[in-house]
Amino acid sequence: MKRILAFLPLLVAVVFGGFFLWGLNPDRDPNEVPSVLIAQPAPDFELEPVVGVETPGLSRSNLVGTETAVVLNVFASWCVPCRAEHAVLTSLVERDGIRLFGISYKDEPEDAARWLAELGNPYARIGSDITGRAGIEWGISGVPETFIVGTDGTVLYRYVGPVVGEVAVGKFREALVQAGALLREDL
Image (cartoon, rainbow, N blue to C red; front, side):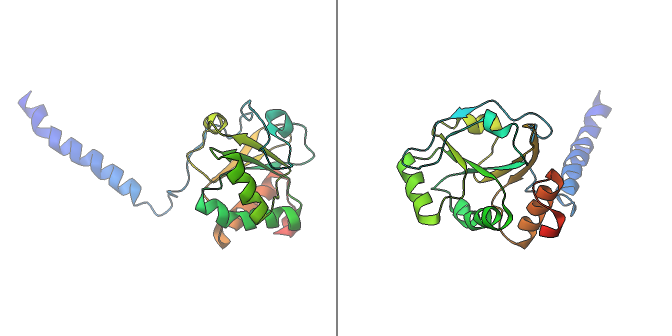
C-alpha cells in the first residue's frame, strides 16, 4: 500500500502535465465550443416578435422547408460584440442574399427596437427571448452566437462569438458555401 501511495504524486503530475500540453497545442482552437446540436434537428421553440419592431416572430417551423439554408443569429442590444458583427451580417444579407433570422436574447423589447432602428434591421424574422429559455434550448454560452440551419431544420454549423475580422468572416462564408447558402464564387 505504501508503494502505491509513493507513486500517487507522480501520477498526479503526469495527469496535470497532459492537460498542460493539451492546452498548449497550437492546432487547438480555444474559441471552438462543441455543440450537441450539430447534425441534429433544431430545438423546438416559438418566440413572439420583438414589440416595437415590424418583423414577425420566430419558431422552429420557420427553419424547416426553406429554399436555402438560413442563418440564425442570437444577439442583444447590450452586447458590444453584437454591435461589431451587425455590419457583417447586414452585408451578408444585402450583398449575398443570405436569409437571416434572429433571437433577441434576454433583451428588453424597447432596447432591442432602439438598437435595430439605429443600426438597421437585416433580419427577416426576430424572436424575443426575454427569459432566455430558447437560448438554453439552443445551448448558447453567450451572445453573439450564430448558427447555420439546413433546409430540413438540421443544425449544420455553430459560430461562437462575433463574426468579425477577415479570418472569422472567411471561416463563416466557407461554412455557408458548404451548407449551400452561398456559391463558392461569392467568396
